[in-house]
Amino acid sequence: MSLALEILVSLLLLAGGGFMLLGSWGLVRLPDFYTRLHAPTKATTLGMAGLLLASMIYFSVSEARLSVHELLITLFLLLTAPVSAHMLAKTALHHRVKVVDRTQGKPLIDCAEARRPPSSS
Amino acid sequence: MLSTVIWIVSAMLAAALVMNLVRLLRGPDLSDRILALDTLYINSIGLILLFGLYRGTTLYFEAAMLIAMLGFVSTAALCKYLLRGDIIE
Amino acid sequence: MKTGGLSRWLPLPLQTAVLVVVWLLLNNSMAPGQILLGVVLAWLVSLLVAPLQEGPIRVRRFRLAGKYLLRLLKDIVVANFDVAARILRSRRHLKPGFVAVPLDIRGDLPVSLLANTVSLTPGTVSAELSSDRCWLYVHALHLEDDTVLIKVIKERYEQPLREIFEC
Image (cartoon, rainbow over the protein chains, first blue to last red):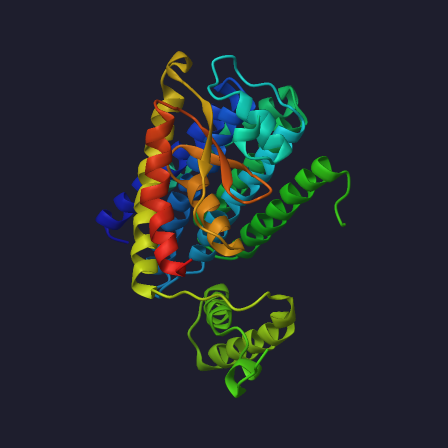
């Protein structure tokens, strides 16, 4: 494996690991549930994409044939991350999870929970 | 060089797992705990992939794929249970 | 429903093609045997699930769909850096908020695609859809101005989706 490729794989791995660490850091640090929801759905997904890309390049070079099945996990995570985020947000609305005081548009929470248009509130 | 980087990234992911565990134990609401579990499984997929890179084998790919699928289904099932009180309607 | 010969024997052409590609990715090979097996399996699965589908998916403009996908990938990376920066900064800077976005598109698939796009890209997560499917409730991590956010979502993501599905 050439040095340039090794550096590329290492950089991708470090970027991926960094994003996943940031996602989990956000999960611990952000103030309320809805803001915490953003960290794992976005940062962790991109982190996984970085790790999978690194693994794809590494195995394509070391086994001397194109290795693309990691793409499948990336695609799967890209498809499922927004769906699980949406379901978690629905659950939180249903359970009236507390929001931080400075959240804007608080009256919308009740409308969203009742699934009615915002004008009738 | 690559093996050093793999060790560093493994340490990062292990730290991420500990943070998820903190949120899982502390989470004031059930939805926080589900979110922590969701992040936990994605981080563990990353750890498995790194182990595959370290050993130089693609054998662990199937394990990662299965965790991804089962993890999503279990998150969806838990949310559905909390929303409706039932999983299969 | 009028069934021509093709739609009877190949009810879901787009989904069948996707299944073949997924099978080849899963096996990580382009061997002729795998391609044959993938085609047969995808065809059988599409015959089995066709009765569950409510009418076929009609993508009218494939080139626009490709352009939308590429822009989406770029936006995902940009939005990720944005969210990462906001996580690292002090939490006092954060101004979270809920927004109701009026929807002009109709149909299950376009609306769910828009909701998923909104969840993945501009620092927002779609939370709930009103039961008349005219409003999408969105939570933003950092909300400066709600009219700007609504405009971005409508012009950057909803408009191309409307053109792709022509609804």
